[in-house]
Length: 137
Image (cartoon, rainbow, N blue to C red):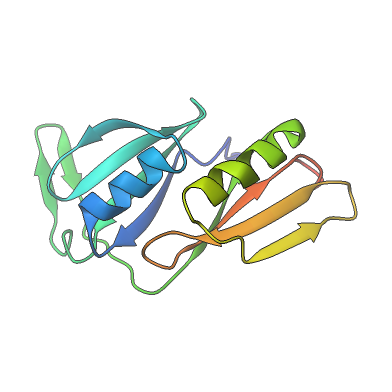
């Protein structure tokens, strides 16, 4: 079996693209790579892309000069985690507090990692995780 080498993109579906974009830029400091009325793509650590799609904006195949993208969409809150260095956890806690983002949960993992959990404006559960939560991280 051939091996997968990583996750390149993660997609979240949002109700208000402008509101969501502002949250991910202002609160999490992500930089937009590209955007149009349907979506915005963010650079996450120079290793992956976070796609925010306006909910309901991709129900049909998208025709591009190089091919097609099949329809996709999603509903309901989902969970995703961002990797952070252990030393930056207190800085992130302060930044979230400064933006009035409530930390909903905290976990100290058996391997030594720590996680904090909070919500974006579309109620997606976001996690900031330090090394030591998984065997591979």
